[in-house]
Image (cartoon, rainbow, N blue to C red; front, side, top):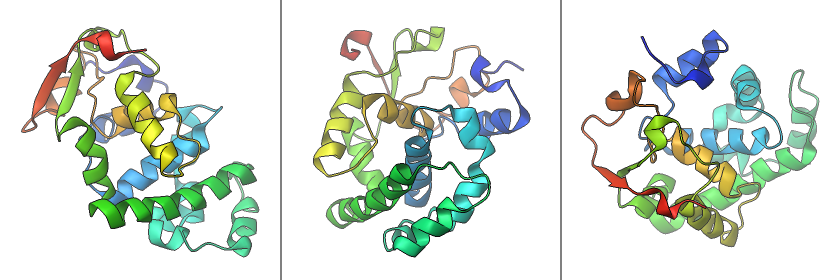
Amino acid sequence: MERCSWCLCNEKMIKYHDEEWGVPLYDDRKQFEFLMMEVMQCGLNWNMMIQKREIFRKCFDDFNYQSVAEYKEADIQRIMKTEGMIKSERKVRAVIHNAQRFLKVREEFGTFSDYLWGFTKDKVILYMGHQKGMIPAKNGLSDEISKDLKKRGFKYLGSVTVYSHLQACGMINDHTEECFRYREVMEGRQVVRKRRYREN
């Protein structure tokens, strides 16, 4: 069974690839989890995030954005003292801050997922060449979304980080064509093919 090569380093990464990565996502709690794992990942690697996922869930109330938005100084200190947690107070504060901004987006659009999928008109994008492994770090779409998120006050969500999120939540299908998940994640979805001209 063929898989994308990046996931082959350990069983947790394979499971994440096989069950979650690239699946079109409409659940706001999961959207928040993926986004905030991206925040914690800045300067590190995704494998570490997957290995520490249960620690993050413990620290952030299973990524309940409503609870996280109300965290106080005592919660920050609790998180910082958690064994195995990434010791970056700036990132922890950014997660709390982003939870508050996340709620504002939900107030305006009904759900964060509706807001995010609005950028692709609810379509999964296949960029020509990506299925061959020619995948950029960011592109025009991630630039646009990152700019809008920053305007709304989100932190640690630059274009490269946002591109990773768009891959993870299935808005962009970047499974390689040989991967068994390439076609599976698109079943029953509206798909649009785009040229690579939007990439930066």
